[in-house]
Length: 358
Image (cartoon, rainbow, N blue to C red; front, top):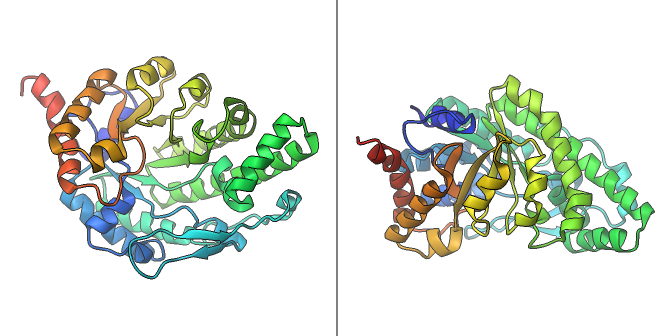
């Protein structure tokens, strides 16, 4: 099977020739391939070359077409600092919305023209041409809650959500809903453009909606409804393109897995803080596949190849290997040793083959 075939089969709960493997390692791959991050998040051709070169070294089943998180806010005029030296991703100097009420005036951006969305669309198109069926292509895509925080400023946005809920402030709640709805529209537009560019996996990466950052009540009120709307609206377009919809939220989110179950995502990325057995149990019967959950820092950055192999085997055993892709709980650090990534991939390639007596 090719990597692309393997990933699609796993998400469909179909047999695979070995355990699919797709650590979340876009920036790691760019640096591993010898490219400067600034060049990757400003030029789609460069990003595509970097990811393809790393793929040809590692041979994983998923290529991540991503480099940073601020490619959309730039389209609204957000001030972004891009370091000239070193391998650092951009940072936001100033948000877009000084007043929450200004969200109603936000324009509807064009993914083909605004911000740096065109960079990632160009990279996706090029990788579809050059990688072919050898790997599944995973698009970038933040979630509504996270994008809203980028536009408002993370600290102020979290204060807004807390105050709206704690004070039962219906006016502020309505303003937040308006902002989140506008963000959902834009993320659906971008995801559709990514599907048309060749993505096999579109994602809602709502990292700020983590229970490490917010309460379950804030998640249920301000994040969950808009994530659910994203997955609802993208179901038919993804199916029409033979693609899948992924949820990524960092952190220990066990308390809201009953809600995750009802999102109707095709694939959920499980952080290392959540036990895979628990995640598998909570999602049983929902036909939602899972990807994860090796610890990016403790295992992939700081561990040894032997420790990576043990962690990978444990992850596979906890899931039974069905409807499962071996991955990392979150993004692999740039400095993770190549030997550790290779150990992870090697374990996935040999695990099922050895148990089948090959």
